[in-house]
Length: 72
Image (tube, rainbow, N blue to C red; front, side, top):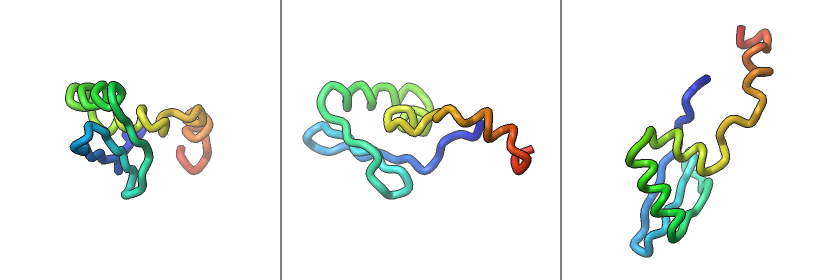
């Protein structure tokens, strides 16, 4: 499975975090959720963490895509 890419995040003075994907806003976290995200992103692969937190992670069609003739 290909690794997600193109994610980045910015932390603001009020403690909120905005996650962007290829320059477009994908999510905004505030309070305890933002702190939990920052701790997780520091400890693990940030691209995977951001993909999971924004919901852009394993949509269920990976098996079908793998078996498509174009991907063989």
